[in-house]
Image (cartoon, rainbow, N blue to C red; front, side, top):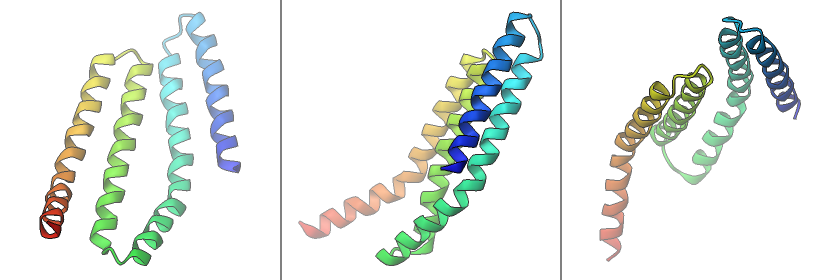
Length: 128
């Protein structure tokens, strides 16, 4: 709860400052937006440790191996990095680059998911 308050307040303060600087035609506004985004990301990464530990416990209890856990965490990480990077690009007006980052993230996740889909299909075949 404490982290979301920090994240929310940081976002609001940075947004207000960026809005004020943009009104003054400042070239510092996009840099401040990026810096604010990085500070928020730092809060999230700090909190993510608990989440990854909880995911590992969940998978350990289910009997699924550590490699699977690592793959799931990588896929989640790729999704978040792609979304964060895309958002920063959109914030500074680079929508074309943002779209390419989003597409690259989706393709990478798809490629990482293919072995899982193949294993699932094999499991379904054995049940038939």
